[in-house]
Length: 269
Image (cartoon, rainbow, N blue to C red; front, top):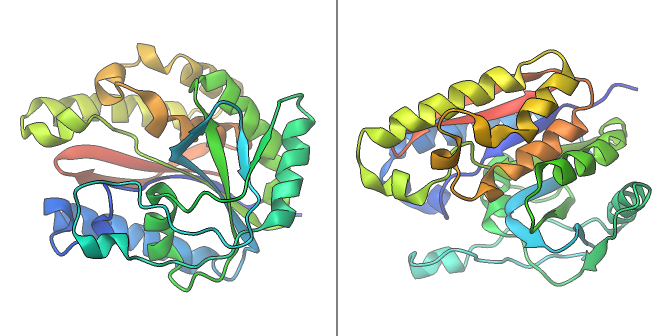
């Protein structure tokens, strides 16, 4: 059976998708909207469910959402009131949650269940664009609060079999996430983001998956790494995706600028 690819996508800032000025960068966010729209058009007829690992959900242990109809979780601040009334009523998928639980349990990892948490903006913002009809079941899996790269690579490796079951696995984060850099308006942030982006893209396209993953484990040594990610929660979903990729080679699937800094998305398989 043919395996679906796996993706690491940039989700952008806050509820940019409903802001008239798209966070002050309509051109950059316009390119991201086009990318996400085309992603949805490509996979809508091919998939039965989507598994999302969002930068905006951390727990002490991997936690799986077992809810049938997750609500909305507006985990952003200082935006217009209408952005807290958004609705995207995609169903959950308790049956797939059980499969994910079994796969992770088989690795000896302690797992928790969640029933009440809503779709955070790392999930609903990009998927509202890619799949606006909200009919495909969505399953959310948390990060682990330690943000340990090896832990998340191992989680991804356990999830690889889902790719043969018409489940699209998406890591939702950002290849650059330094809020001071975004807001600085200086020439330093674009330079730093480009350095790390170049390293990340070269690493992802490394044909030898074992070598690629070793480089990712040591990501902090990369040029511009810690300035691009003072805290790594927006990068860590990529480690899960790299694990789920197995031996499949990665490629640069999206390249753009948001608020002046370089941002990339990646596809494996």
